[in-house]
Length: 115
Image (cartoon, rainbow, N blue to C red; front, side, top):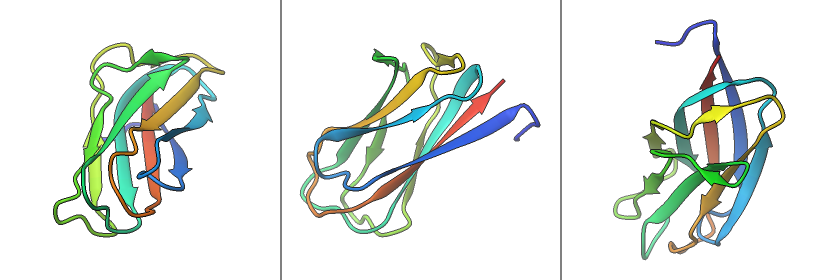
């Protein structure tokens, strides 16, 4: 259940099948309680392994696997971080893909932060 203390950040990655990162700045402090992804197409060959970092430090439980087997546009995957998930105003949140999958497919990530 969402509370008035939750806020949401959204960042788009142009291609989950090419190794790289996207970044978003936390406008306020809190804890990342959930990270969700939705893809715009079908990936192939291998899963896309997604990890999350805050100011270069890995978020424990912040990994998402976007499965290639049966993947379709609109597939949603999520992670619920457990530790190393606190942000302060101005912190940089990085979403990283390993680039193991194939096909050029965009993904949108929503980061839910509870103050």
